[in-house]
Image 1 (cartoon, rainbow, N blue to C red):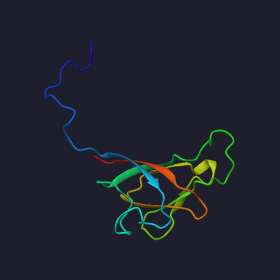
Image 2: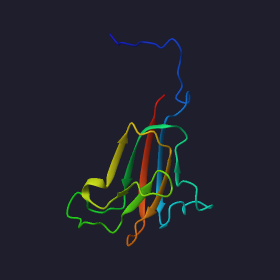
Image 3: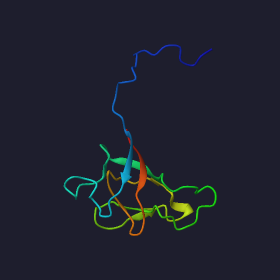
Image 4: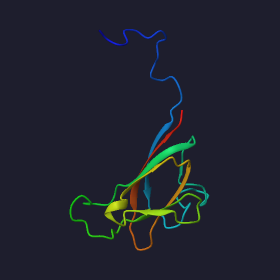
Length: 128
């Protein structure tokens, strides 16, 4: 016998707020904030206070096999728009980074000096 045969209140897929977000950025600039018209605003803004998020450098080719390191597609990220908080793609261990229990909704990105442009995937989730 099924556990739930009928809900008391019908729920449509469009009800409620979404506390998940996904974005892809083609990072071609070498200064934090230059992805925006005013050259200082964050490159990514989550419309809610995050519980965690994941950053992935999608342009690093062959990291599962024989990519030589450091990669030529390194992206630096910042949580305040001025200080480098870390980098994506300089080694096998940081092509993708997950931050749990990190309340953050503003992020800036830039191409590391000597690197070429990259595509960054951002996935964020929040507390309901």
